Length: 293
Image (cartoon, rainbow, N blue to C red; front, side, top):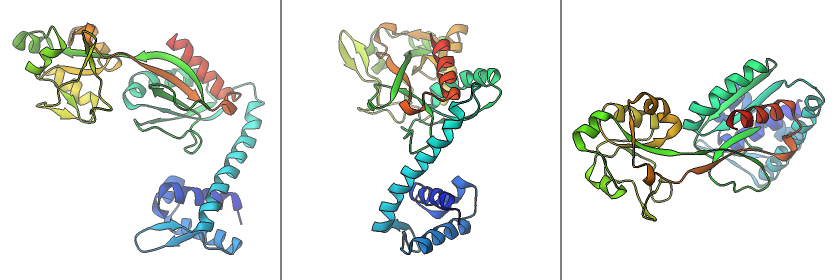
């Protein structure tokens, strides 16, 4: 019996929430997932997963065993990486996580350039606006926007994340140019659907925070679609400078209300301190810092 493989399957079932999710993650069949769990239960002489027609839940023994499995697998991963740390040339798989927009427009080009100069390294770039668990999700390094909350991580500062307010020249000719943040109430403002009082980007006017208007003719959960609407002259858009940089440089969009734009947010490259000795990680960190410097 391959105990380590069975333990990997056990962890995947718990974190995926079902046999089917674990099967997709591990690229095996759900039937095979069930076989691994049954082998574990037979070996241990205890029920680990309580099965029903709708869901699977851990027994008390299963919950304890799951936590132990995570620790063992992490120790195995660290032991395997000792071989990699002894090599001079970076090689192996590097897992990178980044927010969607910043990842598409900044991190992905950096990854491509890094791979061109390090032919023995493979990179898996995961783009998501959700906060990943570096250890639990098996991520080597992540780019995060905002203050670093987890003080156990190494955090290297990158260029701040800046937002800009812009519109197409045709829109400004038709509706006029706003001069103050309070003028936005009389304009058509394109809105991101996830913005609210907690996640929005407050504007600044005479030292007072002003929210982006809540009512909009066009709301979307994706920045590229908001950019497209702005290019069509539909209204004013508030989006990251990295997303609009080419349009601003070409004149397809015009920046307005520069003094009212939201305060930049810090950006960091974060990773666990016990991973810093890996050549693939240390070389990638150096590559990103040099490019962002």
